[in-house]
Every structure is written in C-alpha cells, then in structure tokens.
Image (cartoon, rainbow, N blue to C red; front, side, top):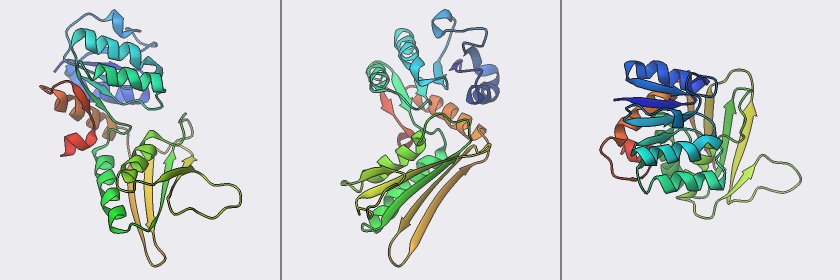
Length: 235
C-alpha cells in the first residue's frame, strides 16, 4: 500500500511514518520536504491525516480529486471543516474518528451497555492528557459522551462544575485534566446510590493510535464512498 501522511513532522505523524515503513510514499508537513499536499503528484493508495484541523478542506479536496481513501485522525474541527469531511465522503471512503485506538472503540461499546443496564445512574467522564494539548475536553471524551447519549436520549453535557446547583439526572459530566506528559487516559464513572462501575482506558504510547490509523486505512480498501468510524471496523 502506498500511503501519504499529512502532519508527518508532528508527534503522531512521526509515529505513523515509522510504522508505515516502506509503504510511506509522501510525508506532508509545513516543516517537511513536502509542505502542501497539492505539491505531491506521485502514486498513492490512501491518506492518513494527523495534521491540524484547519488543513482538512485541502486534504479532503485532494482525496476526492485523486480518488483516495482518507483517514481523518485530527480533532477540533469547525462546522465548516466537518462539512468538508462529510462532502468528501460522498465521493470517497472516509474514516473519521476522534480517537484511533481500537481500545477506545471497545470502551464506547462497554459504556453504552453499562448505561443501558443502569438507566438511573450518574455518569461522569474524566480525561487526562499532557500539558501541551490544545483542545479541551478531548475529542475522545466527547466521542464517549456522544456514544452514551445514543442510549440515554435526554442527556445534556456539562463541562466541569462551578456555582451552586444540584446535579441534574440527565447530565453527563465531562472533566479535563492537563499535566506532564500523559499520552491519554479516559475514565467513565457510572454510579448509583448503592454501587459504582468504573471503565478506564490508558494509552501508554502514541504507537497505539498509529496502529489504529493504519488499520483504518486498510479497512477502507475496496469500500464504497461513505463515512466510516471505529465501530464499523470492530464490527
């Protein structure tokens, strides 16, 4: 497989490039040899994007023009950028996930099953990342919350807490911690008056996300145009 990696000079881009090995045909990064994806006109079978959310319109446009499957592994997209992703998915297969860890995909499913079993439980999500992470809460925390909201339809998201008001039963609390060099931790706490269940995923190295991104691109081989996610792959 011939792979283009955008954001190739970043932490995650370097991980993907290293893992792709000889399959890497182009690393795109403003700080690299190829600064813009439009400058590459060689052979390719797919794109993995670990760049910056604002770059997605150009990357998605390139994927459509060249008929290439696209894995979008960035987060923090604006509504306009999300529209660019969905528009591209009408023409080519696009895999879009806030977290490329297969373990997180499993965690989403476990959380939904647990919340279904305890419909009156309080649900809180706590995520911890390194002190250089720009967005808060993490895209993964939001992905987990949205997964839970699929089975708890009246859910409202509360980001941290301040003030004087009791907890509403419909709330899903989302809390962000930033410290040190933590790669990524996500914890879902589901509690009633009599018991508590804690579901937790820890990423020890960034390689886990690179593995997932490469698996996602291979999953897209031969797929019809459309928008795919981790749930599609693990099923």
